[in-house]
Structure formats: C-alpha cells, structure tokens
Image (tube, rainbow, N blue to C red; front, side, top):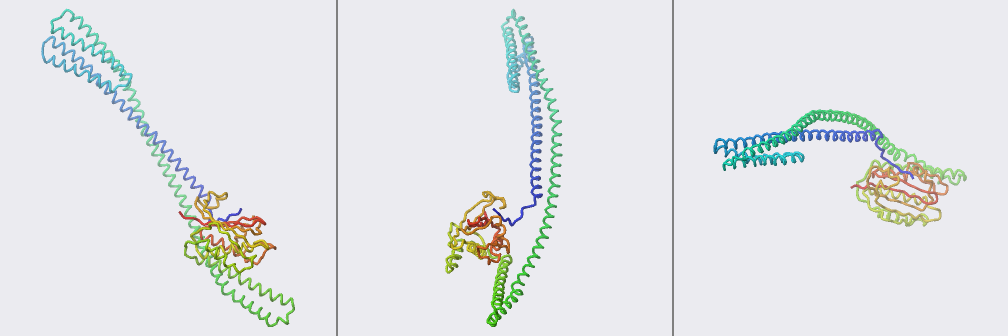
Length: 475
C-alpha cells in the first residue's frame, strides 16, 4: 500500500537533538531533586540535633535546680529546728512545693529510658522529703529519742537521690556531647551540599544555555535554508505562471492554425487526397485537439495553485449527486451508479472538491470492466492517524475525515499506486481507453495539498481500486 506524504518530516538530527535536550533536562531535574532532598535532610538533621541539644541542656539545668531545691529544703528545715525562725519554715515549705513541678518538667523533656530513672528519682526524693517532714514533726512534739536515727535515714535517702541525679546527669552529658558532635558534623556538611547544588545548577544552566544556543543556530540555519527554498519556489511559481500564460496564449494560437489548415485541407482537397493522405490529415487534427485539451488541463492545474477559493462547508453528498446527474444521458456502460455511505461534510474549497471528485469518478468510469456499468461506493468515516496500520505517514496524533472511493473496475498492480498521482503519468493497458492526459489524479493530489490533506490508493488487478482522501479535522 502506497502513501503520499506532502509534508517532509523534521530533520532527524533535530529530532535527536530534541530528545537529547529532553533527556538532559530530565536528568538535571532528577539530580537537583536528589541533591535538594539530601540538603533538606542535612538541615533537618541539624535542626533535630539542635533540638536534642537544647532539650538535654534543659534537663541538666532542671536537674541541677532540683538538686539545689532539695538541698535548700533540707537546709531550711534544719535552720528552723535550730533557730525556730518562722522564715526558715516558710522557705522550707516553699522549696518542697517546687520539687514536683521540677520533676514533672524533667519527666516531660526526657525519653522513655530517662523517664524510668526520673520515676525512681521521684520516689527517692519523696522519701527524703518524707523524712524531713517527719523529723520536723518529731522536733515540734519534743520527741528526740528517734530523731538521730531518723536524721541518719534521711541522710541515706539524700545520698541515694544524689547518686540517681548523678547517674541521670552522666547519661544526659553523654547525649549532650554526642549531640554537639553530630550537630557540628551536619552543620559542616550542609554548606558542602549547598555548594554542590549551586555548582551542579550552574553547570546545568550553562549546558542548557549552550545547547539551546546551538539549537537556535541550527534553527537559524534551517530558517535561512527554508527562506532560500521559499524564494526558489516563488521563482519557480512565477516561471510556472509564465509557462501557463505561454500555454494559454502563445501555444494555443499555433494549435488553432494547425487545426484550421488541416480542416481546410481536408475540406477543400479531400477528393484529391488518397486514403493514406486522408488518414494523415485526420491524425494531425486529432492530435492537435488532444494537445489543446492537455494544455487546457495544464492551465486548470496551475490555476489550482494560483487562484485559491474561500474555505467553506462542503456537502460531499450533494456534489456527488450533481456529478452523477451529469452522466444521466451517457451510454449505460459509461453511466456510473454511486452508492453513498455517509460521505459527510468537510471544510474545503467547493469548486476544488467538485473537480477532485469529478476526476476520481471519471477515473473509475475509465477503468471500469468492459460491458459493465461502473459501480462506485463512497464512504466517509472519522479516523485517528494512530488507528491506521501505516498511520505513521500522517503527522501527529490528530483526527482525519477519510473519504473512500471504491470501484469494481479492472484495477491495477498495487506497485504502481504511487504513479497514478503524478503529473502526466498513465498506466498503459490495452484493455482500456488510453486517451487520458495524465492530469486527472495529479489534480487530485494537488487539491488535497491545498486542503492540507493526503491521498493514497490501493488496488488489485481484476478486483477494483480504492482511493483514500484524508481531510484534517480541526479541534
């Protein structure tokens, strides 16, 4: 199956450059993301260890304050016993009240392992405070017999509390040292990661800048080449217009004179011409007529390029019915029966669509099987370029309205499918009328280009031909 792509693909090198650019940007974003995650992780570690250090310092400070508070309570109790000074008693009660809030604060700042030790410390301190309260009550009652023993027990409880506090302080001091070391390490790594991110980002930006600059220069080169090509095409177009003018004027006049003189020769001297001379004059006349028709079709072909119409909605079914009516008086073997299966409406140039369909129907009639009336089926359907087996010839993933014109004619070898759309190319077949000018289906391809569409064909000898017309659908 042959396809005709009238728009060349972008240069392969440009596509490779785009893929390389996309890959480079993707990798750069990935690298920057990884580095940023690592940098954020470093900052989080710094914050985490800073919080841990602050918390440990808070625990050590509260432990020191708790130890002083218990000692002050003990000193105030002894001072009251010795001096009976009410201020000492008030200070003793004040210090006792401060103990539990301090223990609660230390407990809330501690982890699970330290909390167990704080609970043990609370029990020991409460025991010590209990001895202080008991000894004070014994002193107030004048019970001095067990006072010495009670003071000794209270001293032991105080020693236990001191040991437990030292144990907790040692644990917290070790954590504090570890926290300072870890904090310093992560604080030292953070600027390194930040510097790496800055350097990598700078390299990526420079690489991107030079890559984009390189691509822009290539695009500029392509643009200059395109501008030169456009200038050449414009020059060729002007030459084509001049050729069309010559064909429509200068070449027509000699042809008219050839026909005039051959008609005059045949009319006035027919009786004196032998059979071979008459055949020669007849062939001259026939070929001058044929050349005149070819010139007219060439002029029509070039007018498609020079004189575009205004786009509008075109009802394909109405045009096909109008074309069929034109053959109503033709002999039955040249009278087509056109079956319509939702040919639809398209956005196009009405006159050009009429010429396009007329050329295809005329081709179907010309290639119909001898002794059979042309039977033609015209179908319309919406397709996507990705739905086609050979859809890669349609650029992009977009929608197309495909009109299929199928006949039951003699067909042709599918290897010649690319030939029928070329100007002045004809299939030589002794079983058909070979009087075509080679312009009809070339006109089809030109009209499809004007509609930014595509034409293709497939065929099989004896099994008819399918012509596919692809009209792009906007939206």
